[in-house]
Length: 453
Image 1 (cartoon, rainbow, N blue to C red):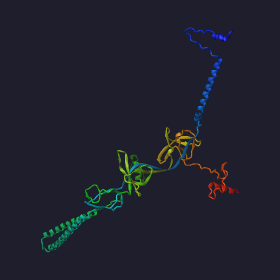
Image 2 (image 1 turned 30 degrees about the horizontal axis):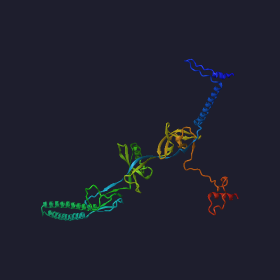
Image 3 (image 1 turned 135 degrees about the horizontal axis):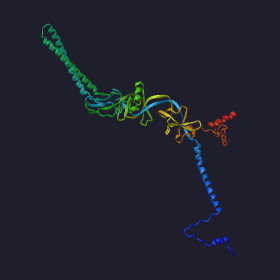
Image 4 (image 1 turned 90 degrees about the vertical axis):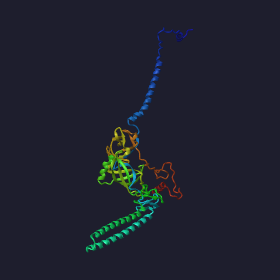
């Protein structure tokens, strides 16, 4: 039986190539080669399709097809702006007086309560006056004695002058009488001064407030012996109305401030609390110091305040704002719209086609949330104030309403007017409330029905 030729070929002994020669693979059939080419083509097509799907959104984005960015906008306006200089200050009383005794004696009583508001002339302390009353009586007695001697000397002098005219006595006697009268006159004057001094000591026994202000804590209790040589004092009185604030500003501001003061302008100073958020009181600038502190490069200024409600307390730290000048009718923009970057100082200007453009501007002074614009934009222009961090030149934007400006919700409930009710709304019968006042929507519905009838 004959075997097929293929089987004969397969059973034929395989001969190995001679040593040193490589094996040569058998040629691939054409049908199998075509199959692998088709597989490779399909893989290439699939990779190209995936790449096309991934790159198409990016291409649209670069081509300007990105969705518009929501932003908040504001318009460039015209208004008045204030040139304000701010410095840290300390509330300083106009007068702080340490009340001391001018005589020595026992402190009998005090006429105040710690922390009390006293007026000028009110009693603060009383020193035992009895020793000084006795001294006054002694001085008055001495004065009376010496006054009598002076009168006697004057009488003798008058008699001696009369006798001298008649040559009854020597001229030396008249001269001695004149000298005696002068001596007695000097003694009387000295006694009068002693009496005045004793009376003054009696006045010093009653210590009164030199100014209107607030007394501090008591430094000496009644019963103690106080001396005029003591430096402690009895109590401290601080004047509160009016009061001042001493604050510092850089020396570069001196020329502008001096120019306004020389022109006779009254400069307003506002005192704010330490957080710089709450206004305490408004006052006026009183004076400018005469030297610059070389260690800090600043100058001190004093502002006066009425302090009618005692809101300013001595040694309190405040923020002083000096209104130097008011600029009228200047172009101003919100500070939130101003950006800083590679172009410099710029804003995103909203164009009529719904895109934004980078507009370089030049700014001036800042007043709160507004900043002066010297060039670059004009009043009426619309600039971006919110969402600028997501923008670039030429980006599309969508203006969003400001916070709190929610659109009104239409009244489309069952009681809405005809034409505004939804299809599935259930009509409300007229007597649904059992005589109670009908809601506003229902009242409208009934009114429309009566009009239709």
